[in-house]
Length: 177
Image (cartoon, rainbow, N blue to C red; front, side, top):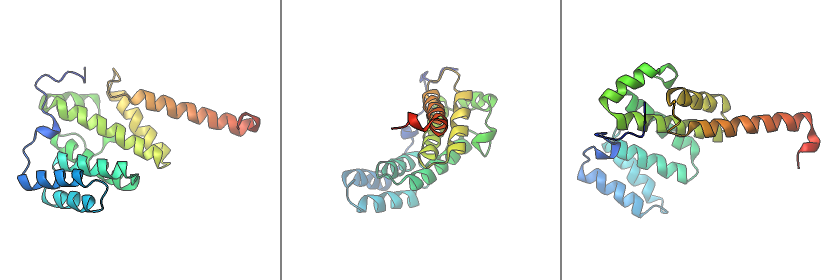
């Protein structure tokens, strides 16, 4: 299936949002360098805890602040929210191509978003040194995204090459700088 086909695809930011939540997200963006930005996003999340615009804004805030543990919590929560909407299994580990196909019938945009979340969450696990989980998430992404539209294969290739380099460095210390 081609995940770049967006004809009639509803995207996460197309969902209706209350004026108050929209204002809080906009104010958080305007105050990005200020500690008040996080409070505004947390308030928006309190009001609309499953709204994807709020979750994405909160994830981005934590990610770009290099607060990866917090970004990971938001990413995992967002995976769960989107997974429920698509009627996917409770965990990404049990996701199969048939689930993705059924999900596409509900919303191609949300399926693509879910797979992008899977990639982002796997990447954060890698950055946090949780290599087994990060690798497993990226392998699941590559399994489901046969045309590699989301780009999980490149991350897996980098991971495999770094693992090979680490093994070689342990075997031959003279190869390291």
